Amino acid sequence: MRVLAVGAHPDDLEILCAGTLARYVAQGHDVIMAHASRGDKGHGEIPHPEVGETRDREAEAAADVIGAESMSLGFLDGEIYVNDDSMRRVVDMIRVAKPDLIITHHPDDYHGDHSALTKLVLDASFLATVPYYVTSEPAHPVTPPVYFMDTLAGIDFTPTDYVDITEMLELKKEAMAQHDSQITWLRDHHATDILDYIETIARFRGLQCGAQYAEGFQQMRAWGRMSPERLLP
Ligand SMILES: [Zn+2]
Image 1: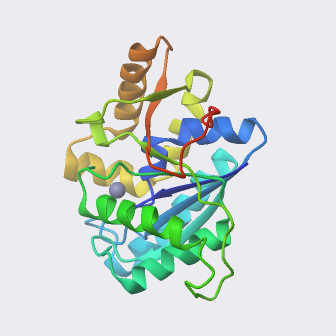
Image 2: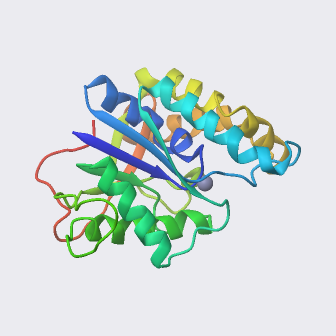
């Protein structure tokens, strides 16, 4: 199976679903970790023009830890909007990645980039299958099932599905640790120790499902997107 995980910023997937992605890789599936925006405003000390490049590199290093391929869509941080140009860019990402399954943000997550990206991904993952929606890439034949990953801090999110990530927790934290710029930015700007946060949320989701550590998901419930089989690892 080809699994495409799409986050709005370069560290979202590491925070919200990297343990699950590592389990897919361990089972022999191909995983693509895509970040839509370069996260170029996510720092206060690195000179602004360098932040996007720094964070692209950090995302590539994190994907290496997970054993996934890294992909960047090149949007500007805080400037993901639902419009024709954005839709074509996301359709092309899907046509290149050729996913059998997509993981992305919950539609109501806290950041405007997150919710805009989800709207783009849901519409684009259908349009990508339509040959007469013409872009530079050929149509992808699969309308993939979609799983929404947890919201930040799990707010207003009740998982329908859990993945036991007990054996992958250290790998998930190691992937997050590649985002040096965000360890300091989140500490200074958000008063958050992100590695402690990751472990705490994983333990909380674990308590809900009887695992030591877990990640929670919701399946997108819509015609053409359901499967009789469990698709999460
Ligand atoms: Zn984000």
